[in-house]
Image 1 (cartoon, rainbow, N blue to C red):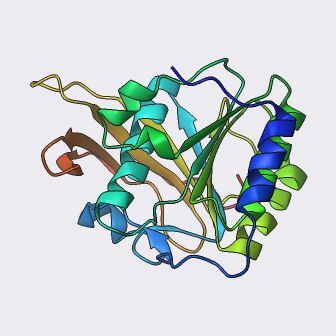
Image 2: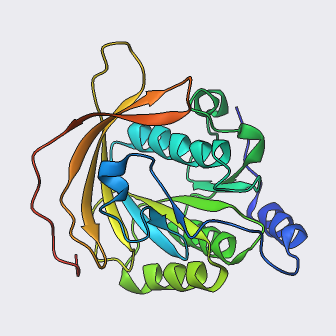
Length: 232
């Protein structure tokens, strides 16, 4: 169990990480499944931007932990901290470790108010010492997501906004993550690309986590869902 720092402690941590230059990082974070990456500009989730995620919160948490943990395993994301902004008092790190996520890299920032969580996310996205930012937000309008998008663009960072509901957003993509059944009790998700700036969206896939290779395995590609408009 990890206890989060206060807002002031987070401010101090981010200040200590500040420094000249930027670590080497890939332009995109690949999922590692060709059927998905081939649909995305840059063959992955682009850095320099934010990505909306909706659906089942435990499923989203597990999927993002696996996605970010995998990048470390294939040397696509340096050993920099991951900032996770949440309204909850703790984050169950051992569970994330089972999905290849190094909990020692995790900075958890707890804030009850959306405004504080959005502030923490923006500060993290501006900081070159952060490898990625995950923020759980209940409500963020187009103006607020534009601020986050601009912060990510300025630092070539990447952010994931876990949303309670679909809203108009400046995010580059929007994903729907839901739990899926697995015969061998391994973690599995139904992953749907609902929106993608500059590319067609609408694909849906069942993915299973492979503990041995620290990678996603495609179980099934589902019927193509109609993509929503880019303004959604």
